[in-house]
Image 1 (cartoon, helix red, strand yellow):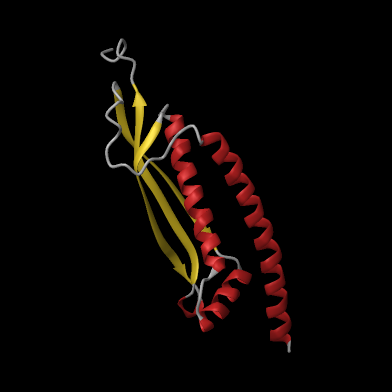
Image 2: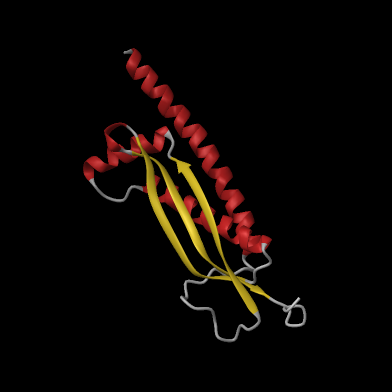
Length: 155
């Protein structure tokens, strides 16, 4: 009986705190995406040929996000019957968007106009009981294009 009470309390707390944290994180992501939309992140392998007088540098953004207890329980239940696991989908969506934002923030700090050849790597970095995903890491990286003033380029 005590195990059921502990499980229920953890489930309710996991849902409440997880929902709060996820909502807050999505609000932060949306606000920062609005600001950083001026820096395009392009999947093209090479920069547009119209861009001249530039230098390039590697930029990256990395994030590790953990799944809350409620979502982990729901994912376990869903895996019994099959189908989409929405709790993992939202976890990965937040992680990808956050990693891209961090990459764009690094590009902006360097004075870049755009980031091209963007790649995203995803890995689970911790396993819980029964080999369930506990945390995921997402790395977004690309090549930032920084315009160089042709007059001061040689100095």
